[in-house]
Length: 219
Image (cartoon, rainbow, N blue to C red; front, side):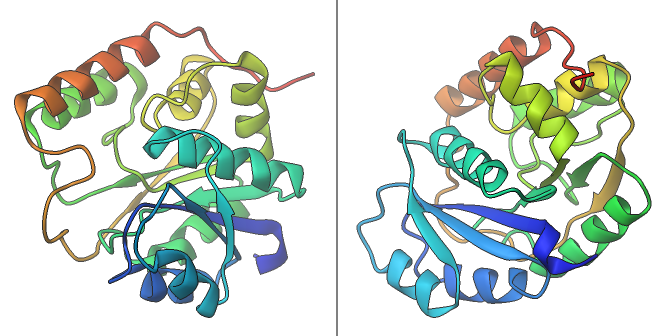
């Protein structure tokens, strides 16, 4: 795939230790768009030094940063958008498989991690596989074609921890591909934590996404 057609959106909150390596690796495959979620360290400067375009999240939090990046990528006219995390859990080299899936005609690409981290993620993975065929709905590595993104944007639905565009597309019968995601397991506290409250928050997000209507491409 011509790298000018792909944007790589990376939400970032205080990831100075890893964002430079992630942004550098991703730049081999497309235009890197780092969305700063109110970082208080030097993440933005490191990302810019690695050649990324850095913009500020319109709303706080993971979904706020991702939504800002996805909208910005479409506004810039990219035909395909991939999302990866800034903490090194997603090896940017997986973007080669994402690009290959797009080239093969897949409108949606979903990452599959070696193993979920929390109890809620295991449950969501089981339900996601049975209902939608998506083995790891909560994986932050996703690949969206313009058709998938535009259908989600037109619905005005919440992002739902980066699950809604994929689930709504699958509800409409849309095709997709999956790629295996490797990387370094995060050191320190995960973005959503491991406590009971974090598990409940993820389950609530999935319940909201599961209740959304199908999102079909504009005709």
